[in-house]
Length: 201
Length: 243
Image (cartoon, rainbow over all chains, first blue to last red; front, side, top):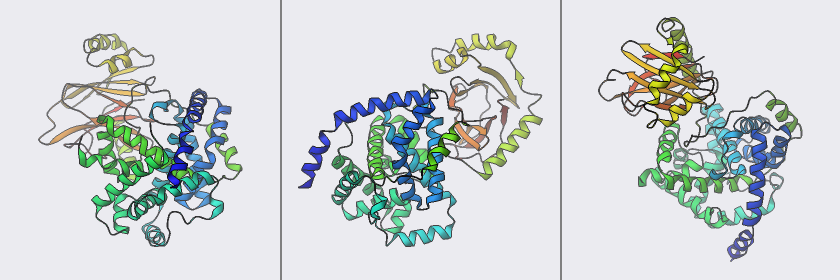
């Protein structure tokens, strides 16, 4: 099965990851001390991923640029609060980015927009993306492979929540499934993905 | 560990909880190490889902970002916080409350608030007695630029300690009347973007230490239903200008 190859490929990575991690920590230390060059490096390291995720959730390029800028300003402002023991720099930045994009989608959109979006999303599976939307093909392949290991309900729930920014209550409505089931599917779906992607220690 | 709330780790990592559930879950997280570990792993997993869509932003964005950070002051390091910072806003109602609270602070409390700048050492000594129990407060008192204020409103008296260096505010109750059956006192920090909960008063003797918020100008105390509210539901029984 493909799982074996992708898993052994990623098991060679931890050392590299550890080196990269300690480098990122130094970078964050410099950013926290107000070093603008270090911040520019941080921007180069994260911009494609942050913008790509925000765009994926928000769809509108102009608004996505705005939110991406807000995310980086927040990273700058709160750099001293970053704790490496709580997760990687990338994870910290992407979590903030997702949170901001989702907040914006939830608050700014009128009910009408939101309903239209809910209707549109029913034909829109999370992974029918245009090819040029995707920069990191390896990452994409691995994620796609791991999503394939989920049940259909797990995959749909995770995709609607993460890529479309729906609350689990909205996901339950969209999929016409009890709340408790969606809650559980989001968790066990992510746990399965975590194990497939080799996340964690 | 509460098994039911624990299943929310997935929805939380995906930002798929409603506002009230998120607040409740973060309170649970603060006490559940196993949940924190799982959440952190699931967040890392979500990040991998997000990274798959990396897309180069327009070149102009970098210049805009670099220009805008030059106008933004960075937060000082925060040594003690365990709970993730809450960055949510309460737009209209909170702004109205902030204005109301500021007005009350200006008009009513102008005469009732006594600054103890000269009596700081007295307060320091008093607080040293509880320092073994309340080390966080003692550290704040010891820091530079710390402000110690006495607040009085009706029958309620308290000492408020504000430490810009720690980014924290402490509320030390002195005389606190019973809030009423099934009610609790809740503290609020009110800044330019509204009121943020600074926690519930656990009893009439225990200090509350909270992370301050950017630009906080007023500390307010309201009576809320047991368990607290997401936003103030009653007029403040005490407000104190922090500036």
